[in-house]
Length: 164
Figure 1 (spheres, helix red, strand yellow):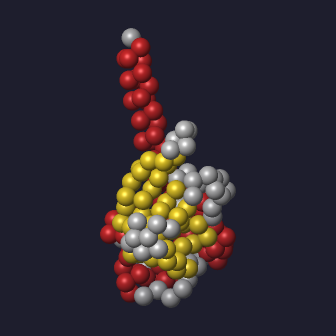
Figure 2 (figure 1 turned 45 degrees about the vertical axis):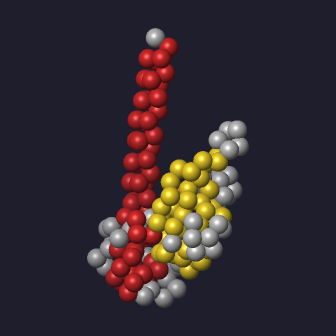
Figure 3 (figure 1 turned 60 degrees about the vertical axis):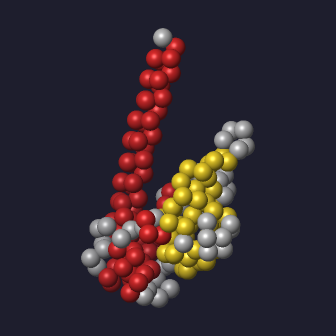
């Protein structure tokens, strides 16, 4: 995919590219491994529980993130838009597990998408580009794990206090 000046500027705002944001050549090279996808309002982009292998960067539009309860009901976790410089599906570049949430287009939306195979190909051909992105993904996942652990401790403390 060709990288327009608008796409380059957008990617420089995405946290995944923080370590390479000052190198337009690196970002252009990475974009060369990506494809452009458009979804209409209401389209399911990712379905919770399915296997997926793509990372999505929102260029234009907005999405709703939903989780399913054990009873089968869906609830909205977040509503996010392109101005927030968001991406999702990054865990699919690291492992081959099921998707952890459903993502739905809230309006007609455009995305840059990279598959795990293309990410690995980029890493093999351009480790100086893929390594900083992998490190950013690892940092994001570690931060989420710390927050989850903290949240679980808060819930545990609340349960213990309720029992006492």
